Length: 294
Length: 280
Image (cartoon, rainbow over all chains, first blue to last red; front, side):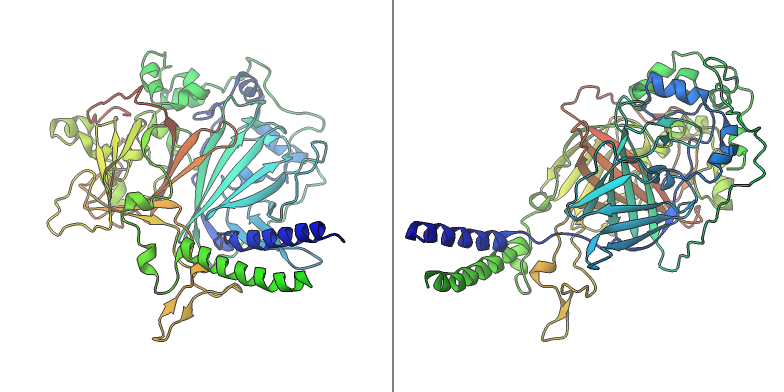
């Protein structure tokens, strides 16, 4: 071996050791444990798309949604995708370290949510996302990293599902970037949903939990009845375009211009308050709508 | 032969450098002088300054409209809170000079509008709103003066949060005892600060929502501010989690969220007075 080659090896070795020495320590915090939700259900009404930067295609899909779809046999045990599962009750949350089966080395974190028991594994070992053709799942595929003390993870490969419990759609092309902040015993999760099919802009929303080491998340058994449901076999209840006769109920009950209730990016900003004053509002039929049990 | 001499030298050098960089990053026991920044401004983990606009994706009908009296479905009010909420009379508030009740420190960030955040001095962060033309001052290292009079925005004590040392042994170290038996944390276990925590007290009684849902003079408000960039638009965002504790009117603390998008300038800044029966 020539002296030049030896010299190169020696330099490379020194550089490698120097690199290792100067690598900053990984900042991270402990998110593991039981977290009790302080989640307030929103978007409980048909025709309530408020605050959502929805586009025309999304609105058309949403308007076709019929609440009887929830009673279809195939939907009885259908879980929410993880991003909405964490948004709506019942959303007790458990976070545990995810260990590699063989080596028992930590590879990420696992989230477990109460309702329908969705599980989400956030891989933090540098593995790539699968190909675009890989199967889509309710919890998608997530990889994460630490940004200082904030866990940031990206979820792809989500099944087509909903943004709300009343039919605002989210496509299978949607990706969700999630930021998990721990402030002492308070946990805030911020969801940034990007859906080129149904949204004109990323949709940001947040929920919080309180650390509750004594929380017990009960099992959530769900079985599809072999006798079917009240929906006749082979029927999929829906509204044809322009035929949703309850679409305006939410706007009417709360005295909101229908156009505003149907969402859109413009409706998110303070300037829209002035614009709403120029819009037509249907006469209210009640001011007690909010008293319905939630 | 050569390499056998170089390796121990390189390892020793790397250990020395590692210790040096760790000390630079976080300091160690007895190195507090090096870690104390000259000012809160100098220690800021992020840039919170500039103009920001509300993006109302949460509680839209409670914020973009004035909700009906008694519509407090998302607020954990106790019976006394409900009784007081039922007394809401915006005309009376206007007439009695109390129109700013819904722009107080507990709920100001819920009011749709624009923020302008600046450093008033090296240890005071100033937040102005165009809605209601209000100002919150975040005092770093301060506590309310004894004679501080209650005001709409109260007194806000601020700190950079997230840098609390780990409080348990976790396989990578953890606090250790020094010679006097005190728990100390070595440099490598320190974390960088990464958010702004503000605790506000001494507020005048106000409203959590425009429709008279009350908070009392004893309410304590904790705000947590984070700045980040979203990967889709590259916009810069300010996300705020607010926790209001008020046993007089709430059965448990109320949690609220607000998001703001950064603006390049003051365009759209629209100062308005406090208005008791308008969303902003």
